[in-house]
Image (cartoon, rainbow over all chains, first blue to last red; front, side, top):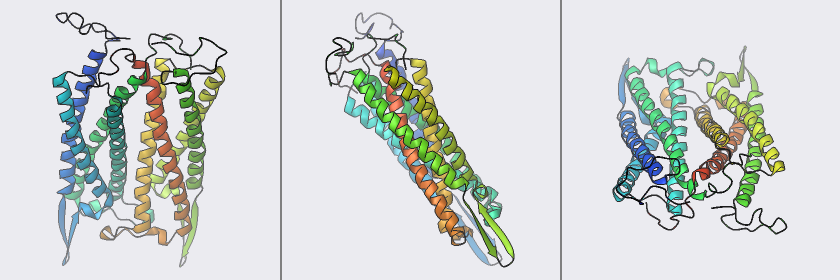
Length: 204
Length: 204
């Protein structure tokens, strides 16, 4: 199957039908660019929000300081968001370059690298959000059966800021999941080639 | 591009080269069947291990009973594993039926349903493992800064059994990630169709 309506008559309006890979590719790339920009900025926001969060409390004569390193899940969240932001920045540059050059991704090894990276990042951010949300639930609600106290009653401001960081990370995680879907599409469509064959067999 | 070597001369030995979709499809389906069987059995093991885990401790005159419902993350883990087991069972039946019928998945809506379901299950199991692992870390190591005690010192047998359940869930999560990759492959290759076109353009 070849490109239909692309490069045949350059002056024409692009033909928007299912098999026009170039158009699909452009849409996928725009969606990818937008999502990666969202990820990059929100991951940075989340990492900064959590990492800069501290609160000092004086209980009688004891000064206690809450910081994100007190909870391993928050350290994981900061690291995961930092990696996600840096990773997305690299891919934003790649997307912009390829959009300027107008090229279509047909390079299987590169598609595999992008797909694998996105998968790792997606599951990493989802796991980080999962464990941070769990820790936040313990901090907010306590666990009376285990005599774990609600530390958010003591460090209200600290907890709110962490909550904002987690909310931001949830959006990062969801966007990363969609991006990994897009890169799966970009990779595995390269393994197709049956469209002209038995398109309508419909078996399973 | 059409099927090469399939259905042309029925008596021949199947030709094993890259474009032989039927062979690739069979291998993918065998891998899928094996992985789904692993998921189904280990998810069941994990759910049963965690759900049946209890330990009674007498401290002075107070009887305390540890059970999985004391920790929301363990409830989530049991539910996620239960759903994963049931979901995998349905797909095992589907795989077996399609292997007996010898059909290839060309039905886009069905491929989308399978892909979406697998994605949801994969992220759900990874998030469940993430939050359960976080809770287990608190239980095992405590969090001295927050005055959360190491409850595993008190409920050793309970904690060990939960640990086995989490280990089992880790394998379930990893297998689910691979299965969701396979279903992404099965779906998105249906959107290909460029193999005969610009295979070697290699741009990005």
